[in-house]
Length: 93
Image 1: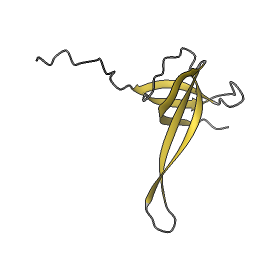
Image 2: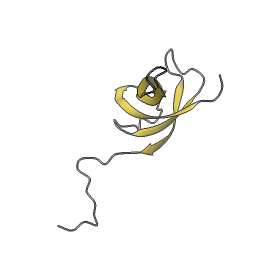
Image 3: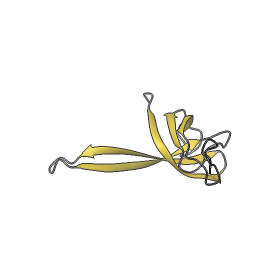
Image 4: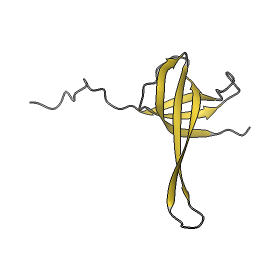
């Protein structure tokens, strides 16, 4: 299989051991109406350190099969949303 990498959003993490579900969304053009349509696909991703949280934007890359359905591994975390308790220290009240 040729090397593939995708950027997606973590939709499920912490429920399975060393596994996270990443949803990859792409836009395609409808062949008749020429409108843009969003298509998405879920990939089970190997996360050995279990560092992923929901809504993390990540880069995943294909690898040899880790289990029956896991064919991708975590390459890096692109961005992570701020937690609810986090505030910006430079802002004064």
